[in-house]
Image 1 (cartoon, rainbow, N blue to C red):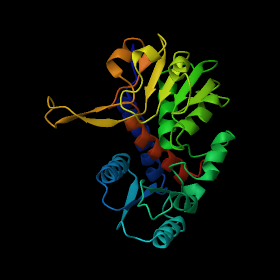
Image 2 (tube, rainbow, N blue to C red; image 1 turned 90 degrees about the horizontal axis):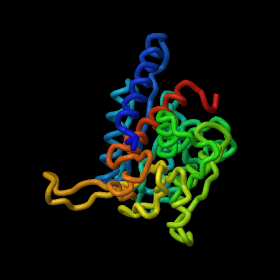
Image 3 (cartoon, rainbow, N blue to C red; image 1 turned 60 degrees about the vertical axis):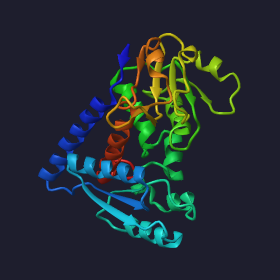
Length: 293
């Protein structure tokens, strides 16, 4: 069984990005610049944004963190996004989710210029990805594709089952795996909470990508021997045996599924680290005008 190490792979990607940034600076070019907007004081969001800012420092990017109060009006937030859109020094813009309930996520997403949408959430980038045009691909699906590529996992002609149809992971993942190219050329089944005979469908998967958001949802009886299993989930559960009092688990029951799988991502240390690496890659692409020109 191969353990697909996202932590190691993300370090390799960050090192490659840092080398390219050093070249750009040596040539007198502009330092890539990522702006992050954080609304409110959600603990998890602050942790995620902090990790992204730290990653920018590691690869030599400039970063700007815009902190806003949770009672900011939708119009005021849209104005902040517009100002960043028009700032020529900023290459990439992310607005950390979730947003307060009085603010429309769709309106904010649509306000971000596609050229700066390094999260890959705007309709323009989703459409370009679907057409197999140059695009900023959503960070988690991009990270998964990169893991498959770097571990030389064959995808052409394979049956890929995706569990979960979110706009952030499941839906774009299904499109990427079906596209003409590598990784891709798979036969894809997109499943979700309403799917009948889900376990039966999962047992036909050569590649099983699990993003359903339920702790240890996939068990060994749902997995074909020799399958490749990608676990996107992350959940914190109490564990008195740990110094912290908790541990992290995924959407897959790792210990029992690992015995049947040919390759599997761990939680933590699998897909998670790749998400930030993909965000950095998209920002570098934006700085070098590789996608929209």
